[in-house]
Image (tube, rainbow, N blue to C red; front, side, top):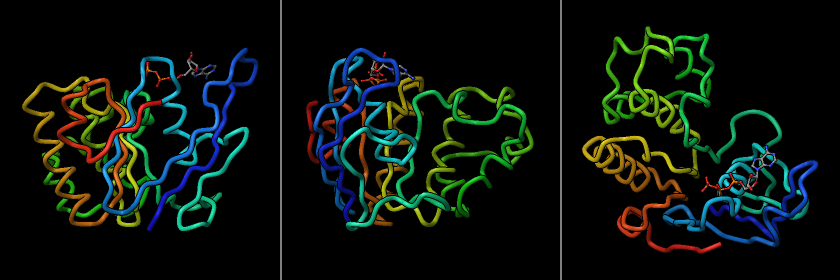
Length: 198
Ligand SMILES: Nc1ncnc2c1ncn2[C@@H]1O[C@H](COP(=O)(O)OP(=O)(O)OP(=O)(O)O)[C@@H](O)[C@H]1O
């Protein structure tokens, strides 16, 4: 499968400048692409457009030449930088996990999610524990492309390497195309097979 973004431009409503201007990229099922750029260059905005969370002003995003679905499960899933902003604070973690597609036990275990965490609310977990749930939620069975936007910035080095080791094995096994945004150049060199600079 192939994720394609063609000639994407974006300007926030009321904004004075274009945040993205004529950006194109392609991602195959076994690719691991890094996106590097200074702060404010539109990396998060681009991730949101690729995952169908934001509509570009011009250009289009397709999977195998078909536009992203307007409803139902999106094959392009995004993991957000701040997990506490990506979950409903009023629902227990078990329900958060069930928001997307079905999630295999292998994913739950591989991410080190403990059973009793599932009965807690988001505010009763650490940032790192919460991010594991967000990663699991993005790895539903129908996920074909994964967009990881600064997902490990808040994690300690050991947790960071556990999570990346699991993620890399998972995307390889399931042939999920991976797009990684990070300011950590060393991490990107280790995780990605090519890096695009905006
Ligand atoms: N909802 C919004 N409304 C208006 N402007 C926004 C909005 N969200 C982001 N911006 C602006 O768009 C620009 C790009 O933001 P974005 O978060 O995509 O950049 P980024 O490259 O991911 O930055 P960072 O590396 O700091 O996370 C910034 O100048 C930001 O202020």
